[in-house]
Length: 157
Image (cartoon, rainbow, N blue to C red):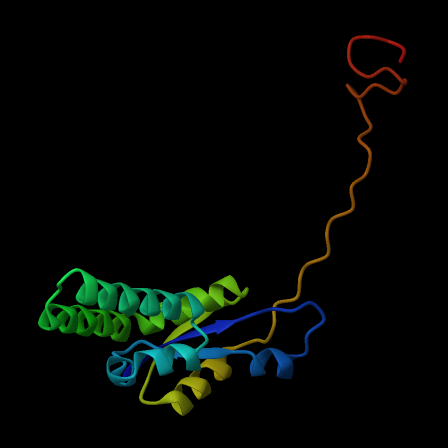
């Protein structure tokens, strides 16, 4: 069983089918692919900031290894630690990226696989939210509301 977070984005005038096509399912789990192939996974999900951080860490380690006398073992341990961090945090990085793009969390589900998660989500999903019409603003009238052209304590413009 796995935990899935579903993120959706509402677009005005959207149909239910189009909104359903934009639903993103993110599984909360350790990413083995990221552990071994971090740059490729970051490129696949277009996580540009995380990729830039990865490249910066790799460059800084290489420079300190070449010019600062950093041991190869230390550099390797730091990169393995960075790969572990990315492997654990990949779902959170994806969710934050989608939140920046306007997606909102619609549900958190427990399911065996993505197909079951989709079935559970769409069984209880009512479609895109329709914005309620804004209330009409009417000028105030009645006792205590001045009916003359005086605004404030000073008559005249």
